[in-house]
Amino acid sequence: MSTVLVIGAGGVSSVCVHKMAFNADIFSSIHLASRTKSKCDAIAASVKQRSGQDVATYEIDAEEVPAMVNLINKIQPSLVVNLALPYQDLPIMDACLEAGVHYLDTANYEPKDEAKFEYHWQWAYHDRFKEAGIMALLGSGFDPGVTSVFTMWLRKHKLKTIRTLDILDCNGGDHGQAFATNFNPEINIREVTAPARHWENGAFVETPALSKKVEFDFEAVGPKNMYMMYHEELESLSKFIPELERGRFWMTFGDEYIKHLTVLQNVGMTGIDPIKYQGKEIIPLQFLAAVLPKPETLGETTTGNTNIGVIATGEAMDGSGEKTYYINNICSHEAAYEETGNQGVSYTTGVPAMIGSALMLGGTWAGANGEGGVFNMEQMDPDPLMEMLNAHGLPWNVVEMDGPVGF
Image (cartoon, rainbow, N blue to C red; front, side, top):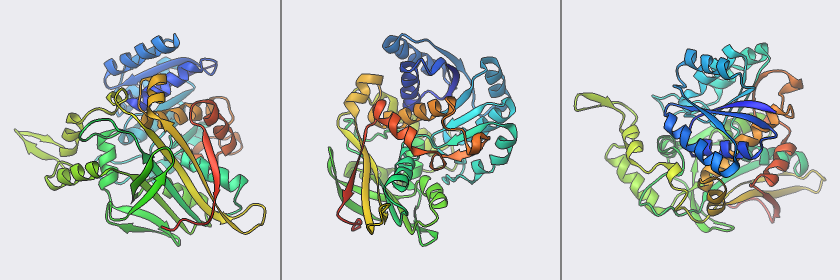
């Protein structure tokens, strides 16, 4: 029985808080805070209707460390779950350090003024968290998160080593909008328009954004174009799998999405540098995010499935030579909405956030030898999370492939 404070009130937070409420034996007291309290109140009302559980709500600016510390001290949670924007990771970690409370997030830190998301800013907190005797778990979403755990499960049970790794993220859902993103528009567009990077022979190789495209036939979705991108789990996986020769991340996008994004780039709407408009400074991308449909509003109209997984090739655990395995999850947008009122992309991130929280609160995941510090999902035993995925709405499947990927 534990008290938890969740920061952020978007679609991922909504899923996570609903799933926490469905597991009241673990999460006995749930508190939700964001800059806009009305969003928290709407989530709390849905949770009450669907589960009968109460969620306390608060207004907070997560970048104001003293205010965050005051809120944490008032609530006295065992864990702070950061489901706000990546820009806010460091101030929330600072607040947790000062208050002496465990921390969890789903996406690594990214400065506001540069589309460059890397772990080194958060890894630098390791010694301070260890000295404080508290734990920070980074990237407890799907990708990063479950994809990292999929990889380490294969390395524990199927492959002695991993030579090549491909992470495939397919959203086969249709929301009926001309152009919309399935998670925070600002973060989504910054990711997609950034140069692609993949790991090869001990270093990152950079290529232009969306310059490499491959068609792949996804189960429960069909053939889709996927584009090579950079994603933060490549940084951590290349660190924790030292033998990795090549690691790549792929995400699917429809032709209409690419067309709209290209036009928006060409007219300057994806820029992150301030411009003057009617005597005020605005960020074009932030203005665009304000006028696009909010991801948390897409659940009711979204149909279809997501299919996210990893394909790994390496030396077989049983000594039978090189083998290739594909492990993935298929999530129904309709089923996600029926259970939590949110679409599948929010669901696939919010559920692992709940599971990671449960494993931390129960002491199953407690860092190295139970000591504090900052840890990625790859450093945890994969088996408990894999078991809980099957029990909480994200069942997975693993198959042996005929050979390595041909792309």
